[in-house]
Image (cartoon, one colour):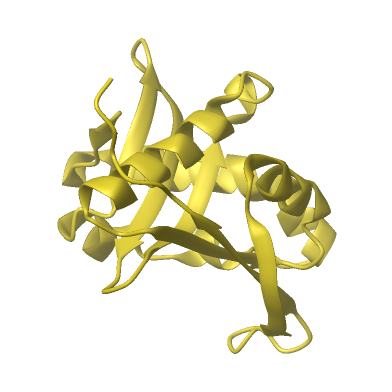
Length: 154
């Protein structure tokens, strides 16, 4: 796992488009992470890449807030799906939150992304509410949160 650099932008955009393609079809429009400008997020140190050899296998975009970490996007390349890399990325978010001294990781997802919601619930997230998407009329966001414990010595 490493922080993204500016030269990674094309690979980040390509992986995000590929990972979210099924949802773009389901929603008849690209989800917000597909249309995101990742340059400022890379500059802010919010994008981590998971590589397998020389290939980009997945990524997570994690924002640091005063009282929680917020996952903006988790994306796994279709070529690497089914290998528990999404869980590895979620574990990275937990670890990073602990390093930041935060006790909760939050995320939001589209209510129609039922497979993702099931994955988050299985990983320990709980639904904290639903709300209209302010950028996409008619879309509903599901807010979720997961407590993370203290860092313990191994």
